[in-house]
Image 1: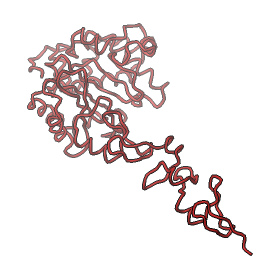
Image 2 (image 1 turned 120 degrees about the vertical axis):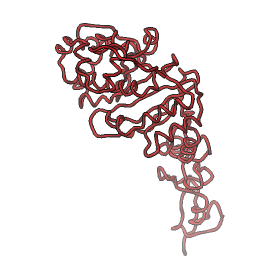
Image 3 (image 1 turned 90 degrees about the vertical axis):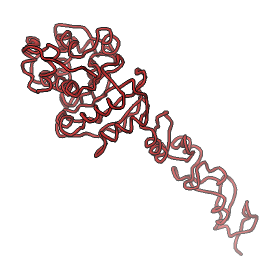
Length: 365
């Protein structure tokens, strides 16, 4: 005679060989299938009534709490690895994230997509250009993005709380040559002007230039001597850079303060690494992957904008090619005489920072 058991759920007898024990209860195969599920994350069998998942996946409560969350917009269940962070710093699913990005052209201040590198070379420039007085307007931002991103995603727009009534234009990292030849800066700046924006004429706006740290060497030990020389150059030639920047001393003190001159580049870097100045320093060292030149006033004048990138590039060249002693001996006149780019030379002459006579300048915007 075949030995049987009574299923704890349906109450019918079944061969003992088909018994499945579940939390002290004996179940037949059919009831096991109907009343229990297997957690898709850890593989544990749980009661269907305890399923913390959704219609597409079953989860025990522990796995759901540790590895999953709910979209703040539509409420769907998604794994932490699948989640995006939206402009309100909430976790959302991919569909809600992309839908929001398409509808809001101006992102929050912390928005930073995965960088796309444009151009071929070792040195990349990421630009943040603040524009003001035309409104923090999604329609205006979309108009600027249409000019910049007609062929590729080169630019995005972020909120900036330091502005009165504008926003910030942020590029993906590009080589200087790409900025000059392929980035439609002239059209972007003209479009911003036509939309009622200004940059230089507003005391709120800056032009910040990021350089990838890897441009100065593969390791931190290789990078630091060149970065130290950049800091030394900025401190030694502070008065000339103040003229170049078009900032007032008070503006620099607030947004791009100096570290203070010391006789040796390494001493300035050591001082900076102790946290003096923080991110609001003339050359911000707080970012893991870049250093950031913050001293320049914003501009919508094309020649000034390009000359600023060329100056930063020239400073990097000098920091990489000269020894500490050679840099200490270099005068501003020698530095300026070595500048070759026509935009930079024109701007240096306009600001009376070149070896030749100044020239007539057009109004900044």
